[in-house]
Image 1 (cartoon, rainbow, N blue to C red):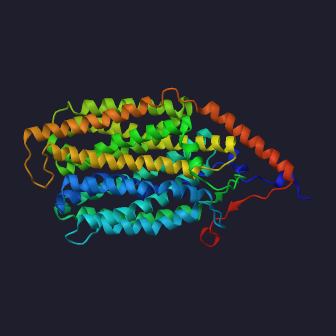
Image 2 (spheres, rainbow, N blue to C red):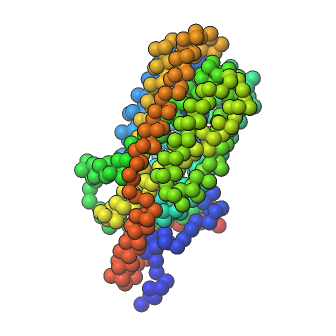
Image 3 (cartoon, rainbow, N blue to C red):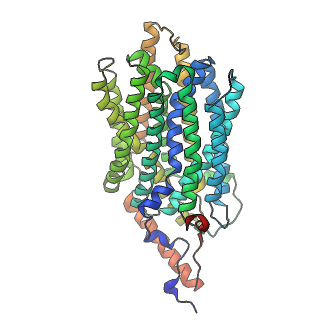
Length: 478
């Protein structure tokens, strides 16, 4: 008989294993493209299609919103399919690999378009882009939750992913700064497209080759239906996270959508200086993700997030009172807001993984893919509304987005109000939604202890249980 001391359960490594830093960095590489796209898609691409191609603010905003709302219906299906996948190379790795070419194709067609594009062209390729983005973000986040099972270790894993994403955003922001003279011809946007296509393919390959995937057996194989979906979305802890994440995505997304319009037309900064300030905002997220994830280990994720959201809103209000065109005064506040905003997505995702453990304990079901699908759906709605609503309101107040256009004082004042009220309102609401949240570090430790105890009993009952671990692609990883 094989000795039990040499045997591990499918998830046994969770209690003791800690992914080495170099492998964690390799696993986090898909974050390069996701972080770069978070800036390029929300800040530069809508402005490019509305201003450079003259498609109009309201039309571009409505197109983005419509595609997002259609795409969000697909995420829950993808989440369920991922959770039910069983292959020789893992549950989530195949989906990550599938997402790379789909996302790269959508990026290429959007950022390097032919002359005279239409709204139909934008609609079609946005849809392809969003499908590819869903495949990568869902599979990567779900895989990350399997790598890290402990409450604090999840802050570490998702913190590194966040840092890599911010590095991607930083790199893509350098492009318009270096290519300021080519901005009018769209050369900067095309260069962004080539960069993001490249890091998408390389990042997915790095994660897939360097990381082993532990497969958690849920022991339940019944069909998944609408009732099961409702069980997840109606959980008090998950419902809070979904609503808070929606608000914490809508606020900064609203700000990002009209950022260049606001800083150029209302605050008196050149396009180059506006990009520099945005670069500072993004760079601040690198130390922010690391420091705030460490703070969350001490004071809990939701409390850290609430304080960060309040500070973010205060900084945004103070920014509007600063003298126009002052880089010296604007820079510290942009750094502060970027530092604090880095915690929003990072801590929300780590808390979703905690809920996944609670579901596994209570129901014996592995639903983390579906849970992340709910979060990405909420974020997609938020992104759609942030662009669609803000662009529509700017159209109502008479703001002209065309390059070189002259706007009236009333249109500029309306732009200032739109830029301030939306982000502050939603970010503060997102923070308030975490008041009374119960799934903190102490409660999660109890859940993990119960899961470990149950797995130990299963091992004893089965006598010997083999380790289920999808292999690294050995020929490439050595």
